Structures are given as C-alpha cells and as structure tokens.
Image (cartoon, rainbow, N blue to C red; front, top):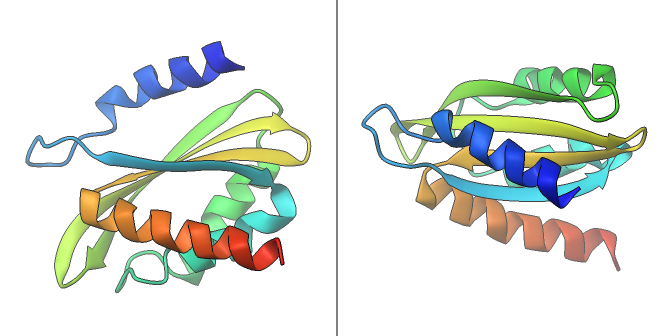
Length: 126
C-alpha cells in the first residue's frame, strides 16, 4: 500500500503545480464510500464557486465507477476569495468500500480543507 501511495504522489508531481509554476499543496484522507459526498461538501464549503453539487456529483460518480486498485484525477478551476485557483482531486480505490482522496490546490485552500477535514471527522466520530 505504501509503495502504491508513493507512486501516486510521484505521478501527481506533474499535476501538482499551479499555472504560474508554483507547487500545489495536498490534503488527503482515506474514507468509506458512503462518507465521500458529505466529506466533499464539508471540506469545500469555503470555495466561492467552481466546486458545487455538480462537481461533487462528478467526483462521486467517478469514485463509484472506479475498480479496485485503480485511480483517476479530475481538475477543476475554482474561485476562492475572489481569486481563480486550481483544485485537483485524485481518487484511488483501495477496496470495494474504501476510497483515498487527494486534493491538491493552493496553500490557502488546502489549509481551509485540512481544518474542515478535522471538523468533519470530529463530527462523525461523536
């Protein structure tokens, strides 16, 4: 598993840069498939536009169609604090009911996502 994740990170090296050449930061987690939609809603609530219900549906549909040990990446252009920014979602299907989610974006967005991720997991573990 560790080898696979390392390979994914290396492969994403080409995807993980902004249009101005700066490196994108990563937020990632592994979760069960039923938690994917609520997770995406929770962690992207600070994005002004470009990652709403249609984009979340697209990511969830792609995750459902992925076969075990397969991966897919989707790129989005989002607006955050009135700035156009990239948001890259990479999915890796560990098991029939488990998905690894890697979200790449600017440092500001990934910090917001990390904070929202903590609150999300705290809320479902209560």
